[in-house]
Image 1 (cartoon, rainbow, N blue to C red):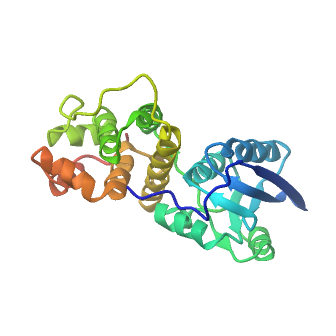
Image 2: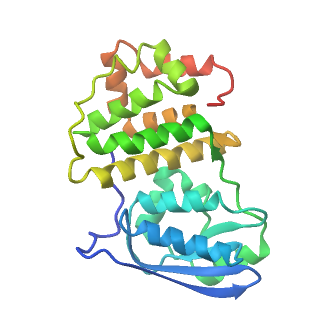
Image 3: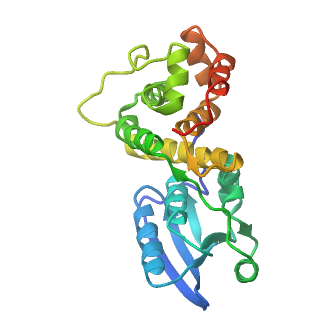
Length: 272
């Protein structure tokens, strides 16, 4: 599995400061400064929500002072974007190259427009309509992500993490029905026994994996112009992110990605 995209190694003392400037007409420039990770992302979220409650509708995020970013921060942006209505939108400005790489890797570059400067971003926000609407999670997809958040911290390896994703998906929605048709069920996929507590780095690892899967699933759903993210979108995201490891898991169960895709293709339009 790919490692989190980093701007640099995070400082031992996690810190994040969030400031903002009222640019008029409901537009706000928000400047997070420091590291955005599992520990600090809630501060960014609460700051954005507070500004939204204050009446701002359009947000330019100036990322020039961000020293470190993992996909937890992207998860905050995805969730916050779903709160926006009407002409509300989030755009990014002065994002470091590694942030741009993370956006491209997760497919979110099409969801969050990026600009070279705050001034350019403000000009585009004031002169353009609303950014693309972020599709909502369908109920089954929401359940899958919630279960993944609970289960992934206990994974002993990336392979075990993948199996946990497959076990959870096999019980939900159209993705579950397709997985069951090729012989992957909750009982057929072995994972490590759950210990009494998560491994030391488990919380960070699960946040990265779950956020990346959700981000890519959102991009997949957007590409097919869907109103919601389905379990099929999540399954396709898992297949993409785990790559060869997913193919090996299918092979171990006597099937292949081609057979799985055939099962998905023979199903009705995914709704869950």
